[in-house]
Image (cartoon, rainbow, N blue to C red; front, side, top):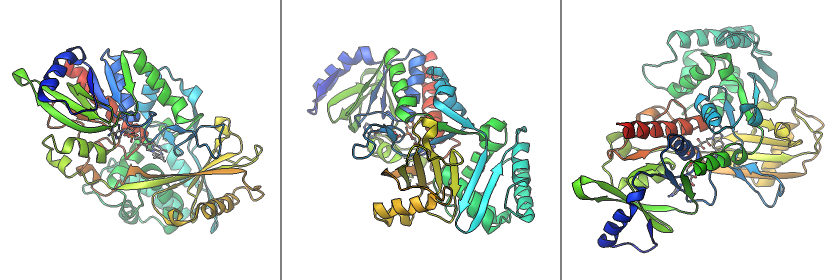
Length: 467
Ligand SMILES: Cc1cc2nc3c(=O)[nH]c(=O)nc-3n(C[C@H](O)[C@H](O)[C@H](O)COP(=O)(O)OP(=O)(O)OC[C@H]3O[C@@H](n4cnc5c(N)ncnc54)[C@H](O)[C@@H]3O)c2cc1C
């Protein structure tokens, strides 16, 4: 199937092409993050053999379980706290296809937000059991500790964006959108900013209003369950990644770990048949159908020199935003009032109580996007967060253990007009495809976006092969 390390000559490549006839129907996927795994599982289900090439020693990419040895030696934590929404239909469908039962792996909670601040009374938004969007209308009208005037402005905004079908003639920032709908400073700080950071990991002054409206439409406009919050009951590798890998391997697929793809070349054969020569850190592999399921900056580097880029792909200038998760272990009896608690006017943005994953006393605090927290020494950051948690639990004892995880390129910056540079999964070569959260899906960089992109490439290849 392949040659070791050395650059093969043209003669050797010809021989490899002949040897690889048996593999000609195999689809090669570079990257075993959620998009690569979703793609591989969908192809595998359709009886198409797949081979995944993954640079890391583990699958899962930006959403995986990690063993942090110094702290928490007996537990797998995630590389950062993740949550899903009820609207993540493709991910839920994929779980089902892999035999993962929702009730075994996810804790579902209807929309119920509680937000604490050192400068304001506690704010509560509770959605009643009514059909969408009435559940949200009533939640907004009964928003605790928000003035009647602000509640009416909120409802009016929802009515007006619904009338416009959650679309905009021209993209603008989320801050401009909120200003247009006369949202008060308190509503922006206590509701809109935390929501925008949680869903798009981009500050409201930069975030694309168009993408934000799509997220609102998908979460609040169809079924009440779409706005549910879904919390993982275990680490992401146990919940999904390992199950996807077993499924793929049981369906004629395989995965090669520590195979970092360094270069891709195109070899034109007889009758204009094309073969991709994939040079990895270990072997050179040939492929007829290839999917790059890596982050945008890697995909561009790998395909950039060989293939003619489509105009929008040549402009692929993504910037990235970090996400910081601080895991704090308290004595087991410590509980927050809610599984998820919001904060504003603080460094902490959201705190998730891990009692749902049978990790009592473990609290994960998420800080999206850049900010002064990235400049603080670790101990000072942890102390600040510990003190902020006291807003919820005034008699919180001292923490027993902690772990700070900063993912520097957690997501692409979902800025104004971002959709004009997000590429389609198709490239100028009919057997080369892109998958990943950055490709053109309705979502910002999310698990759902990654899964949608992987599934749509797989579906396209399945259709291609039927023809
Ligand atoms: C801390 C954090 C918190 C997040 N929170 C949420 C959340 O709450 N909800 C949500 O929906 N989303 C969240 N996200 C976003 C979500 O994790 C990502 O959108 C999703 O995991 C992206 O998947 P992907 O397959 O597109 O890319 P990736 O996960 O980046 O996968 C790409 C894979 O390609 C591999 N690779 C790269 N280069 C090469 C190479 N040269 N050769 C071979 N392999 C290569 C990588 O090792 C990786 O495994 C969060 C992300 C982070 C980091």
